Image 1 (cartoon, rainbow over the protein chains, first blue to last red):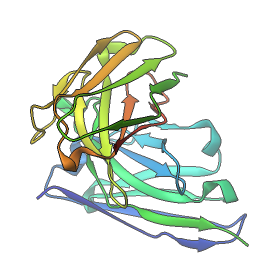
Image 2: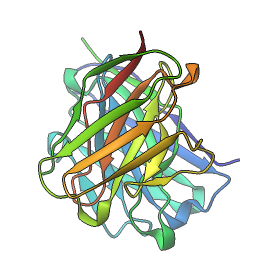
Image 3: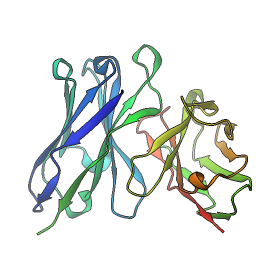
Length: 122
Length: 108
């Protein structure tokens, strides 16, 4: 079964840091672009960042540039999101998601994790 | 960056009825790289449609989609009770990727 499992969420004060992890199984993790998507309470989906299969390309939404860093360890089938200088508006459920494109190209997000909650509050 | 606008915000329908959801992009979506997702409360989104019109694995054929350029449509031919949910469109043709704000399909 193809699945992804996030961890690392929690309560953090404004200005603090967290590192999220996402472990994939049941598919060739190293072959695909990987993404982070977030959803603030009661709101819609917001794409956050993505990373190419070999880490040669990374992209971010403007609101997290310079604060968040996406990375991956293909040997461990794990995707990461290092979040620094957290703000109240970063409060959300964070999902990891796979772009299951042919030959590792861009595609819609076909495998999603269950999400991990990040709450930024004093 | 591309902004996706979905309409209507809420669609109130009865089981068995047809649902038509719209997604309009502020610029042309490259390669028709547009997807549709379904999300139920407390769950992760589920991919329904990719590349504007291709059904994802395991998605029933009552879900269909069409469109190109800036205008895209998701149609649910006959609503089943499990179809009442929020639907999002997403473009992955031009970075940064973007989602629409969602359309809620609720029971009338």
